[in-house]
Image 1: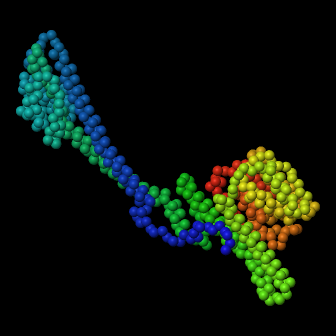
Image 2 (image 1 turned 180 degrees about the horizontal axis):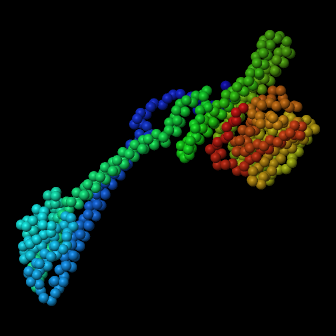
Image 3 (image 1 turned 90 degrees about the horizontal axis):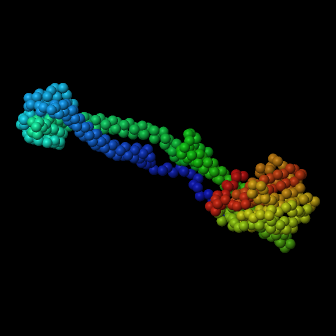
Length: 504
């Protein structure tokens, strides 16, 4: 079995999730949450509003009584401050005049008591608790000093009675009492009516809001429902499903993320299928050769021929072993532990590569320049990468051709390593394909059983280092492979997120 990175993502999502039902839907839960939240707010708002209205009512009633007392005192002041003390008839007439000239507000009563007896009121009809002979009236008739208070009555048409009683003294003796009284039942009824209307309004708003929320939530959550139905329609043979991108915001981001995920998944599955097909194709030939030679080995009695057959079989076995090793390396390049990073002296590394590469084949080798800097890299993987490029250069050049190696530090801080040759070059039409797995271009000296994985391995190593490859080539004018790396690997490399293998 070939070592290969297995994709654990299921190829089909045809298994339907159990239906959540009405009360399991997201918009139902949103509706319930919104209803509970509004109900709590209404439950707090209505009594709080009523309480504030009652406080305002009490303050207004106290103010009204105070203003009535001030009006009475202002009206009586000229008479009481005159040099001659008023007689009882004058005092009574002046007070009765006040009742006719100053009209009390609604639910307010002015009461006139002279010489300890009820005389008149405005309006004339008094509530039962304030009529002559009542306990409250007898209390007012006996008043000898300024008094204020309130009396709670059981009669719902009266409610609470607020009053202020002002005694009128002439020559040091209380001759009259003026009472301003106010009942609260009428305004309490108005507060109750207002509260009832307020409750009806907020309940109407609540029902209307919930209705609009139910309708709006269906439209808002439609992309999620479309996402669910799309995922259920995806199978290993149907990876073309995508969501239409409508609008922006979080749902737009989800749509874009889902489509991008499906693009990556489709590319990965296609890449896996093509990888398996390519690997099977590459292994089919040596297996056929081995089988044919073993059959000949069983039929041939010539010892020399048998040894030659065994040699050919072993050669094919070695070829399969090399192919499996290279496939294993490509699979490992997708794993976090593929690289072992350390600080690398680029100057020393370039010189070492030059010394190792120049013995690969007799060519006009040269070392252009070396970068006096450090970089963070896996030296063994980078060596493998450069040696593959050098070997590739020898396969496309002759003994008279030049092969140059070098390194440099770019102005942007990136580090460049290159292998350049003056060989046969690469036609422009096949340049985009040279890094694909099992691609085999024509060369002057390339081995017949070359696997076609060398440049794929180079690309995998460069990608793992978060680098990139530049290829410059012209037919009969040579080729230059330039590897460009950051001096320091991104922190993300510790979590490892290599680029996926492009589809072959």
